[in-house]
Image (cartoon, rainbow, N blue to C red; front, side, top):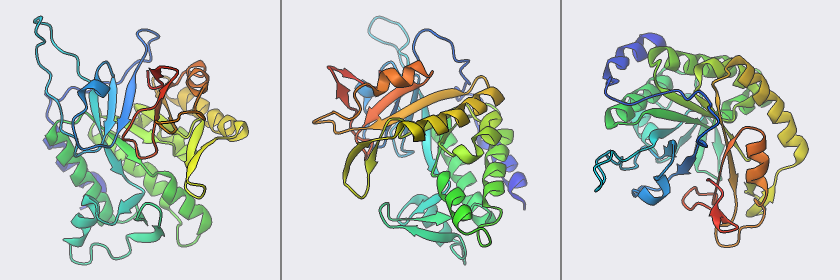
Length: 297
């Protein structure tokens, strides 16, 4: 069965009762989001957020009535899904291992820092494992998916034009198929700038990770991103926004929660360019407070 046929069959698992929406990008009230990869519920962090990008092991809170009788607001919970790399001990790796020969040819290169492998999105067995995970997340009550590590297969094809030929095309087709199969699903991409304009019509939002700061894996510390690098990527974001004016723009920066310094001023810079802003430690477990307030809003 082809990838499109497989995911259309799974779309029957998407309950109409799940609340999904694409935001129109209105000016007020300010759009607020969080990225949190912890496994424990964090109601204080989620309070007042529009979107919450979380691990798909996060315990979803149920919306209920407050003591005053008013319905408590709850963010749309968006489940993390890596589509460009496979964690060595993650659920996708385990799913592939259960299939005879399932891992054969899927792993292209190793990412030592994250204990993962760049994965071949061209492989039907890998695409099916991803679609199955998405169907599982929707059954759990998630309203969207956050597509991470798009840059990994794109980078691989650029470095290995023969062996990696077709990875870019396969990545785009995967996202387009996902959107066609679940039209109401909130789909947020992390970076993926080389294909962002192509993906934009299928997306609800794009996360510009390392907008202003990043965690340096070699220096083991937080550093600023160059103005030139940010400027080049912003031109790509502008083209994507032209292709989809409703595209929600999210900026994510990193800093030391105990001694925040490098991210100061980044929030203002992001908001001036139309981005909602959030700052966390590099493990995405602790929001960063700058000048007495959370930079994430």
